[in-house]
Amino acid sequence: MSPRVYKSDKRQAAAEDTRLRILTAARSLLAAAKPTQITLDGIAKAADVSRQTVYNAFGTRAGLLEALFDGLATRAGVDLSEAFAAPDVDAALRRFTETFSRFWAADPVAIRRLRGMAVLDSELDRLLRERDDMRRTALGSLLAARGVEVGPETIDVVWQLTGFEVYDGLARRDPERDPTGPIADAVSAVYAAARG
Image (cartoon, rainbow, N blue to C red):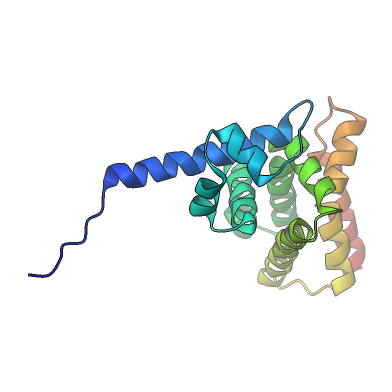
């Protein structure tokens, strides 16, 4: 008789609860009014788990950061299907811009701090660059799906306009105004200029 594979739903649920507690602690530390140094030990302490538990849940520090980014995206409802389903390229670009503006708006303090930390942390910098490259690739795919041919320079400019730094600059300049409109207008103007 072969040994039976034992899989406990309770154990799996407990592991998922622990992961969520760790991610919530990491996000809370990032968003705190007076953030402490964001370290694995600090996150473990805030989540009331051991450092080893953090490693068991995410494998590596990079795994924790990836899960944190994914959690921020899920929380913001990032979904580009509306952009790809839009009736024309102008509507597609507007939906793309709105999607990322919602993402940036969902937790700007945490995102700002992650980007600031990346200046001194090569691993975090690499992960953020990979995420930014994913946005650039999605933008290129969106335009290609519409049969739009623009040069890489135009894609780079539109990509920059839909990035966090532009969003954050507009949002902080006038907190009462939704920056999505001005960003979408700028994206449309660059696109129109590139098409001639």
